[in-house]
Length: 67
Image 1 (tube, rainbow, N blue to C red):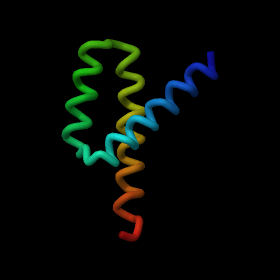
Image 2: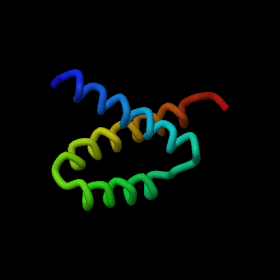
Image 3: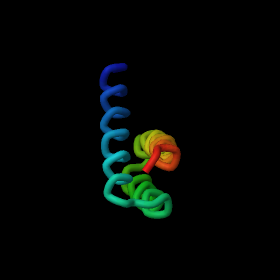
Image 4: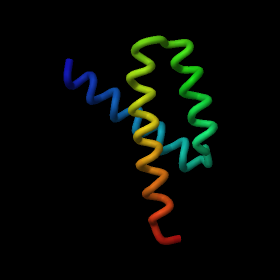
């Protein structure tokens, strides 16, 4: 079970980073996560928290990286 959870977190991080690279902003990510929670209920809430944490981390990395 742990490897399945780890795999899910890896997939969330991959898609979150891709969204940021495509220009998604925090508001757009929050809107998408809200819809995912609405449609996916409990399990989606858990992944949404990971997605928001990942977005924040990747967003901070992008603002700190030299242009």
